[in-house]
Length: 263
Image (cartoon, rainbow, N blue to C red):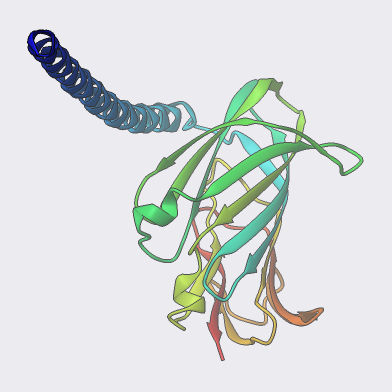
């Protein structure tokens, strides 16, 4: 009996000590987790701030008194889903006009102010196109949302590109909800080009492919038909309707393209 009472308190004390240590360790781990979450949030805010600064400074660097590239061809195809999601492929050929070019700045957008949860899911890649038409390696890119509907993309070359060189590259993206106004809200939506004087554009096409079974009304934006430089064509692409805008000799800083509305 005496031995039991000697051991009993010892066991009880040991249990209480272990419980205290467990609570202390748990509190320390929770504190570390909170610190990590706070650091992660701070790092994300800093990354967004640095991307915006980079965009601002590249805006300054990329705004010389004369053009940087001459775009010989721009062929864009946008494939739509019924929920408004879109995938896009753009094949671009351009000639460098500066002595040396280190990056390109491109801007893309949607026709509405998208929520952040959709913007986070946008995936975009840019890669070289080889002479044979095969895909080459991808470029480093920096993306910044200038607003809830405008995405700024800085595409960094592997090495500086010299004046007179030809650039052949492809832009691909998967953009959730990009075309919600047209597809889900059944409102007219515009598919247009707007190039600055620093990017003179010679020839471009913009094709929009609807989901199977759907058709649309169309009309020109920025020009009147008939027009010798700009036109819109509606055709079948398998079981899907395809609307193609084609243009050449684009005036700078003017919105030109087509407007679609589902029937």
